[in-house]
Length: 308
Image (cartoon, rainbow, N blue to C red; front, side, top):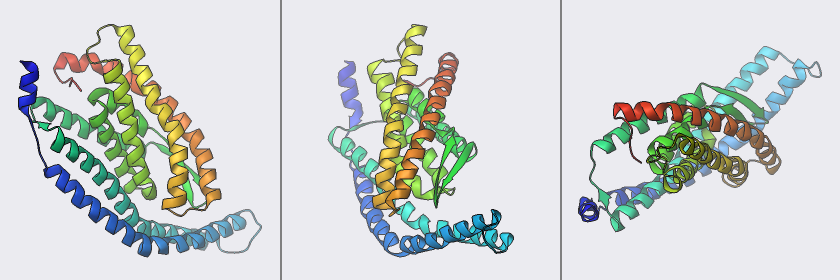
C-alpha cells in the first residue's frame, strides 16, 4: 500500500526541464559573449595589475622608485576595474552550471516524476536556506586570503556548513545549499572568477557526504550513538577527501582552460590549494561532526528533524 501511495503521489512534470534548457542556452550564449568582450579586456588589465604590484613591492623593499601611496591607489583601482570586467563571464559560467543542474533534475521529473510538496519539504527548504546563508557567512567573513600573483586562495569555514547541510538534509538539498551559499560568497567578493568551480565542487561534496551518511550508513534511522558518530565522521571524511583531491585538479584545468590563467600560476595555485584545502578539510570534518551530533537530538526532540 505504501509503495502504491508513493507512486500515486508522484507526477511527471516538464516545467523544470524547459526552464533548465532555456537557461542553459541563454547561459552559454552569454558566457561566450562575455568571454570575448569584458573578460578578454580583464586579461590585459591583469598584466598591468601585476606590473603595478611588482613596482609597489620593489618600492617598499627599497629596490625601486615611486610614490607608495600613488602606487597603492593604482593597484586598488586596477583591481576593482579588473574585478568588474571579470564578473559577466563568471556570472555566465555560473548560470551554465546551475542550468545543467536544473536540466538534469528536470529530466528526472519528466521521466520518474516528482512528489507533491508537504510539510517536510517546507522544513527542508527553510533549513536549506539557513545553511546556505551560514555557508556564505563562513566563507565571506571568516577567511584568511593567500595571494599568489594575480590570483589567490584562502583558509575559511564555509566547508563546515557545506558538510553539515548534507548531514542534515541529504546529498541533493545539502549539496545545493552549500553550492548556492558558497557561490554567492564568491560572486560577492574578489573570488568571483572561482564561482562556477565552487558551485560544482560544493555540490559534489554535498552529494558524496549525503550518499555516505544516508544511503550507506542510514544515520537518520540509526539509534546507536557509537554507530551514528562513526558514520558521521566517515561521511564528513569522504566528502572532504573528495574536495582535497578535486579542488586543486579541477582548479588547475578550470583556471588554465576556462579562465586563461598561465599554466605556471595555475600550477602554483593548485599546490597552495592542496595545503589550504587540506586544512579546511580537517576543520570541516571535526567541526561539522561535533555540530551535527549536538544538533541531532535537539532537532529530533523539537520535531524539526527532517528525514532526507
